Image (cartoon, rainbow, N blue to C red):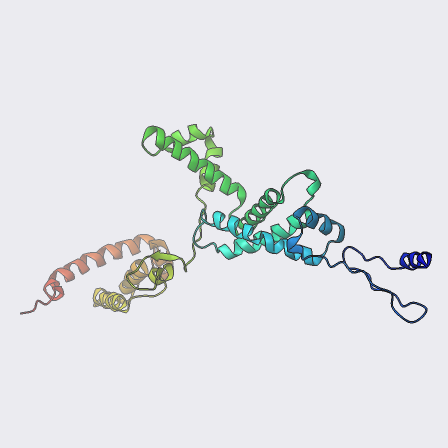
Length: 300
């Protein structure tokens, strides 16, 4: 009888250490006993076991677990990088780029090399953030490099001599002469861009004053200035002939040259210059006679 029991036990299924195995029906229609081993959650696994299992299975669940575990490291690196950048750069954009670096580090990590994952992925995350910043920068990297080179030489000269360097002195510090120095100096003055939504200065109210709130709109003209400009033009051209009026308007308002005015009026350049001098003498006399009319009215 003990022999029959041992044979029956030999036919029992052995559970897998990860998932367990369900019993199979016997010839009599009943199920054999089942041995099940329930595996603990991923959070309770030792990290070397997590990496070994991920390298073996490439499980999406393990990948998500690793991503959630090391996301705070992405935020830390992005915020540290953000402190050295202008206000127009959004820290959320840096974090998004860092997430891609973290994903690449998870897929490429090899624990057999003996390097901690935190050390390995920190460099990948920072590299992804720097690549994103370079993609956002419209100025070529060579220009940025030359700008830093010139600025560094300028700062060192000021610290040593206590004053700003001249072009000749800066050229000696950089070791560049002639056209080479001119090229470096030109590239170092690359035009920058700013965000109109960045804070201009702190206000007394709850809302910050941004650049767009204080920037001057050159396309808009002051109605008062336009009225004064038209009145002065009417006053100056009053009593002049058609040709004289055109000379004044074209020269002072349209900013045309004497030669261009002569071609327009079918006159020689010398004739236009002669008429212009004569008009100025007459206008000076008229303005002198009307000086009392132009004085501001004082209140009683």
